Length: 74
Image 1 (cartoon, one colour):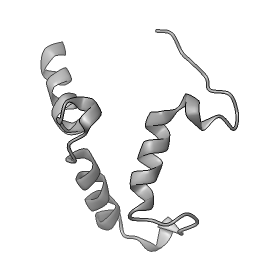
Image 2 (cartoon, helix red, strand yellow):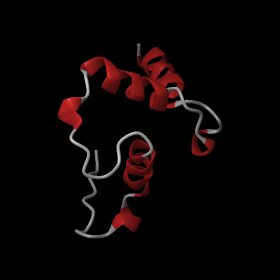
Image 3 (cartoon, one colour):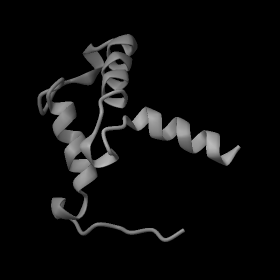
């Protein structure tokens, strides 16, 4: 597998990561201390993001595609 490392301070090289950071900022503003949240609260946010349809995924959710990939590999 080829591995690509982004240059430091180059967000344009990692758009998926930057998009996810933006989605997380809707729940947790920058600088938020995540230790004040319970594991259940963090899991709720995780579940909402994994079940959110994405245009780039053809309106599928990440969870749907992950499940589909697991089914294809077994």
